[in-house]
Amino acid sequence: MEIKPFSKKQMRVMTWWCKKPYSSKDAIICDGAVRSGKTFCMSLSFVLWMFYRFEDKDFAICGKTIQSARRNIITPMLSTLKELGFEVEDKLSKNLLTITYKNRVNRIYIFGGKDESSASLIQGMTLAGVLFDEVALMPRSFVEQALARCSVENSKYWFNCNPEFPAHWFYRTWIKNAKRKNALYLHFTMRDNPSLSDRTIKRYEGIYSGSFYERFILGKWVAVTGAIYPFMKDSSFADVPKAPFDSFAVSVDYGTVNPASFGLWGLKDGVWYRIEESYFDSRREGYQRTDEEHYSALKKLIGGRKIETVTVDPSAASFIATIRRHGEYSVTPAKNDVINGIRQTSAALKDGRIKICNTCADSIREFSLYRWDEKGQDMPIKENDHAMDDIRYFVTTILEGSSGFTAIAARR
Image (cartoon, rainbow, N blue to C red; front, top):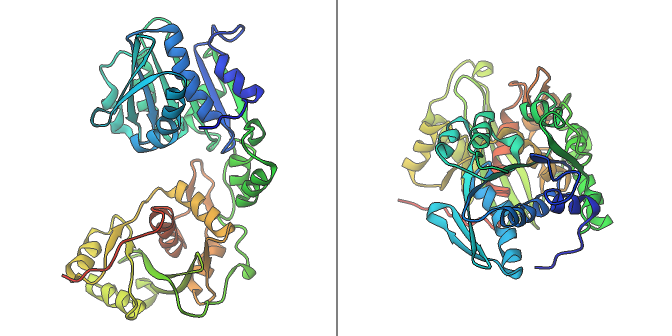
């Protein structure tokens, strides 16, 4: 693995625990822009510190999920550690790394902190240090339970994250009170990552707009306001490309009392186009559809095309069961992380990986009406959001869910 020389700020992360005036700090907090180089240097510094200070001790690395911790921290770190002379035994079944250097051994346990129940997973441990990757995505109860486990003398806390809304508990409790918490706080921008070229930085700057630009490019803890997709203007919608398409898929936001929105997507020249849609509003129509009637509408929208998969609102268990019972289409419960999904959808729309065709009138209408709820936490107003939800399901589950989607329709 090629490692470019660290920037001045990255070097501070690498050495804070062994150089004055920061070596007496109890914690380090790194926040700021995406791709700013804070995660890799922090994870490497974490391991170097544990072997400088400790032997035969337990530590923890925490991500939102175990999978994200492995992707963001463990996998990039392992090859570098081996090049530096460390021996690493990765026990996947136990989510345990046993690391050896010159006959000294320490252990790292890997945890996911995705919800309130995750706090119970870490109870009872005794730790000499803990690293939280994307701590702003974890519930406070999990983080505080992990911190309470660090009872070994000279233990330290390591935090990194991208910004969220300014009322977020971590921002108010730790970043705004870093001095009182005896924590070193470092704010990163993309310019602090020497591995990024000017061209790459400009490309990232073009992906985001509005509040997401301020958060992910400028690294500010700002509230989201106004339209969720402010860049979607009349000129943003495309004509339906001429056939043939390489592949087809469908995304579904299911509703009985609320509207149901189905989107038909076609892949052509590496771009997914929303070429048709079916939108049923029971209040407007004066009656509710059954699952079988929704299924008939789905078949009509598909119109005999070979569909790779249908991704459906994961709460729509009865409709997912109906699709499976008919056995004509593969069905995938959608990933339903709202805020991350909106961010991914915004990026996909801006960089042209998905395009909405001008045949999709209800999507076009909702793009103009879909807005943030400005009462506190990051959440959209639950109005005019049904096509928006099914588009988000498509992005998170099909576009971002795999590289080269391979699901097939199978008859039973």
